Image 1 (tube, rainbow, N blue to C red):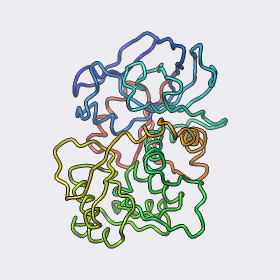
Image 2 (spheres, rainbow, N blue to C red):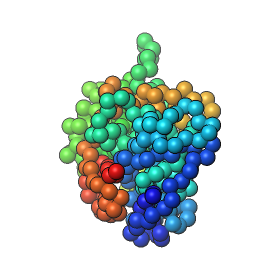
Image 3 (cartoon, helix red, strand yellow):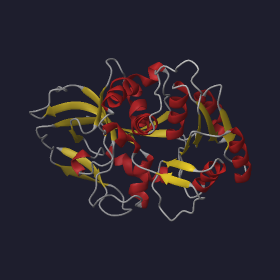
Length: 348
């Protein structure tokens, strides 16, 4: 029997319900889930209704590891018994694909599925499942959408080192971004709280500069403008407090695109010449022309990125059982565990 943690109505507690084990169609996989990564966007969906799910009841969740227990008749790339790491595509909304359950369907070829390397233990897999959503978005934004080099690409002799501004380098997405860009040969200017300043400096490299984001906004702006101009500006926080600040940096250099990691939840007034751009950044990996990038993400970046030094694990707090999910989501929206990632371990 399957079991799922289900959001039955807006802002309601998730409730556990018994469900049938689904049967994969010709192009699908059925995964028995072992670890579930809890993402910040899921806490906002469940506890604040922003962005709202397509309908209720709704099974949230995008990131998980598990074992393939059944495959469709047309699947040839995977086998029963393979251990895999999965990140659901943002546009895939049907409940059978939601991660907060014991058995999940995967549309082979339509979702991000990476084999877990032989010998990877539970703790290592937990660190990876905690990062997979943001890691795929980092690759999708910088290399898929913006065409920047990826870690491991050769930097041509004499090629100018572009400067990138990552506002929010101590966030989960931000940490991955500064390390990705540094390993790809870019200079990174970023911001951090004093608590995480040392870590962010290490991840962003010796050519980086890190500004204390607890300083008065006008002082932050002055310091960041002095380090520019920037070829790319990304607001990793993307709240009504940070968007105006980051947009002033762009305005100071004549305008341009401000890349955001959250949709706009209320009207925003931006300086003339500044355009706010948001999309589910991992979606670019599925586009025609990016097949090689997707292969690199699932075959190299995700399974071996930590080993190669292209990404770093964050502190993970493990909780047990689907019954723990609602409490974790509640704590996350209240700000508990900043800088920490939560992973749910399912028993047999």
